[in-house]
Length: 279
Image (cartoon, rainbow, N blue to C red; front, side, top):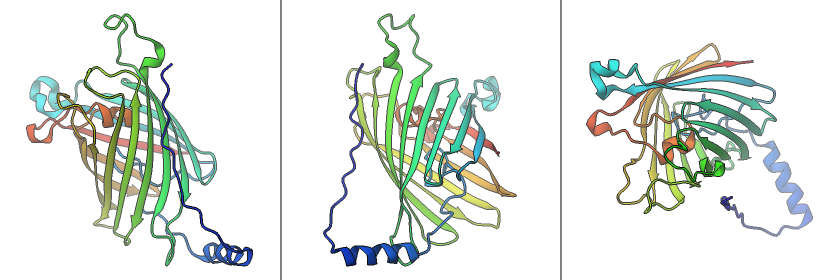
């Protein structure tokens, strides 16, 4: 089995006396956390720094219609849709786990809080995100030597967000991912990307959300493109209904980071929405 050494996070060490350390802990503990930078677990495709609360179970149906460029022949995207069924559970207040399945992949992930944004204190929220995807689209009839672990893609992200005001929140997400199988001899298995996204609340219940992922080392002859997504969140009694247009029909991280084929300049985009229920 091919192995991937996922992102190793190194934090600087500082030396404090015992009294100074205890004083620092008391100071941090007394500062108020900044909450609700994002109302939904995802911005559009990009994971947000929001986690499920401890004990909450989310049932999510995420849907991407076909490309609207197909016109009447594809019923303007209503044919050839991709649907993901996902369960998300708040294991603790700082750890969320999930499992999902779509036509394209099985996907398993964890999301965990590392640092909180504090009022008059630490300036950002930092969350780690790790996922394992199992590709459903690879056919043994096309690849007779295919092994089961060739279907694996590993993703590791740091989600770093800042809530600037009640209206505006922004996020950046340095990303490393590894595909055990690539269909392009010039493409490295280990790949890098930087995701950016944001939310702007323009009405009491409505916000505009945008995210984008810039691939750093994509092969020059690759058919795949960087995903751009634009959508709206509607807050409805404690729940959020998301509607969006995106250049990626893949919903899981490995799908939209590595295999986006849509192109906004050619009208090759996909309408989608996310429906959720919290138990």
